Length: 152
Image 1 (cartoon, rainbow, N blue to C red):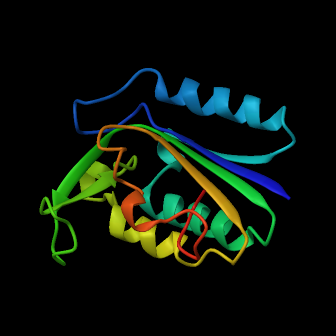
Image 2: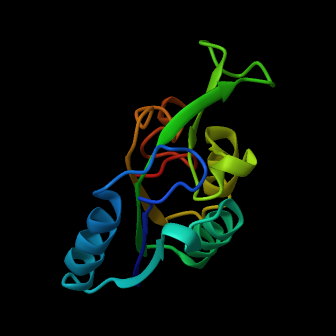
């Protein structure tokens, strides 16, 4: 089975930091993945709250079985927050910024790691993040290809 989740956030209410191309990115990914046989779900602007993002990402990871492939795309703001569990060399957790970030909600790399750690053996899940701090938001250094911890 091929599944996809596209997330695009232009509107960040109360922040003065709206974006202009992220919804287009999510829609373009949806179209491209649909054209390749993926069943696609999208979270756009207000639908992309932290709780909805966690629920949708958890669902797609949980539904992806052995030899399935799932793609998750995120286009929006990224940030970092102080690392509170001392697992980051630089003292920062990288994070995605949901629609409701003005309420203090971020989706940190530790939270994403927990979700991806639930991936079934043999399931392939790809995360593509177009955001600031996207290079380490997946905690890629701890996800080794060919092991139980990979996301390749």
